[in-house]
Image 1 (cartoon, rainbow over the protein chains, first blue to last red):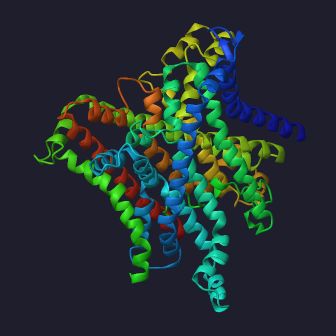
Image 2 (cartoon, rainbow over the protein chains, first blue to last red; image 1 turned 90 degrees about the vertical axis):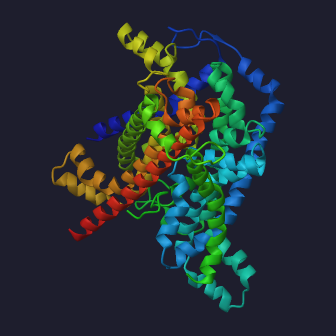
Image 3 (cartoon, rainbow over the protein chains, first blue to last red; image 1 turned 30 degrees about the vertical axis):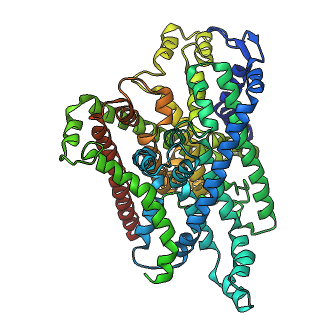
Length: 294
Length: 285
């Protein structure tokens, strides 16, 4: 019995590695291959052409990564600003039309981005926002704020109103209450929402390409011609670079969030104490991005 | 609605109206006439029916989106169920399944392109293992072909870990004793999956299915990289009609876009309605 179980474990482990690590390894091999002609299972000659390309174009590359980074951070901040007040009301108040309003607000996740994106493009040309970073930030916020909203609603639902009342009774004004009570308690939700919004904005190609029109630099825009042109060496090298950025972000956040929870409520650990699963993406909401309760 | 609530939601209502709302309305307006909004009735919608390539494109998109969403849900549910009851080291290693979730679509598309190329490593490996030319010839039509295997695979690879993530959130609430009881009552692994796992995961799986299906319906990046030139996925058809076609093509493109938007909205509404009814019935039982 035990042998069978461990045999199964090994099989599952192998499968996981093949499915999730295998493709990355093949991309790595491609990045370092000089010649990898058809029947060969492994590259026949190696070269650092990809690495040299990255170094030679470091300036372009860094400026497009920075541009992506800056507009993505702006999208996170703007999402937070437009979502924080509505999230509080949607989580705490019961009023007619609340469910419809919530469904409407969450709808950009479900309606394909192209359906409103092309109309927005038309509008932004008239308004002079097309081909500008402002336009890109606005359209990316429209496509990704629901993740922030969902996370903040879930966050507010877990904080009892009494904490704020208590602070208020003790004489704290609005600012102190917000800074010392609400925001710290909401922090996990803010981190969760921000992570997803950042990832969506940072990895988007289509909306940036449509609204930015090539004038707004982006990492995805830099990457795309190499991916579609079929230069596997350079495409693979850039892909590896692209893979690293979200992973780094994810690891940093995971560590920060885990530290936060280590001193806080134990309820975020799995019911059987397995798999400490406070990964930011998990907490966008147990109900899923879709607002309707199962 | 009192004033405080109104003031709280107003900024988001305005933002939504000026971006998503305005975008949808402008697509609709442009579909009703040439770019100057001189509405000459519904001719663009009639045109949709008269162009067979648009009809084919719609059917093809439904096939690709449906196939990739169904496969993602099945694979994702299986992985979630496996990881939930796996031993601790496997669960820890299982964290690697998050990887595709954080990868951008264009990167996943590229990885699939590299892997499945007719002269790619998988094809070479298959040939080496001696499956014969019939199998390795199959790689010639995996990418860019009407079968759309490359696109389906890219969507599945990108999305099934997301299904696992969502399903694990629900499965964590299933106590181990439930499965132990099922086993003591003589249920084998397959029976346990269908009797305990599937009912628990069903609500979240159907929600995720909607998200994935609609995403693949309107997704641009993966068809742009991996799609066939004929038939095309509907977002590509719309995009090229609008930007590369003549001025008369624009209302037609916007008509197709409006139909796509309407379809998604109706689909979500119907689904929400059905989900409500099912959960009521289950509560009644």
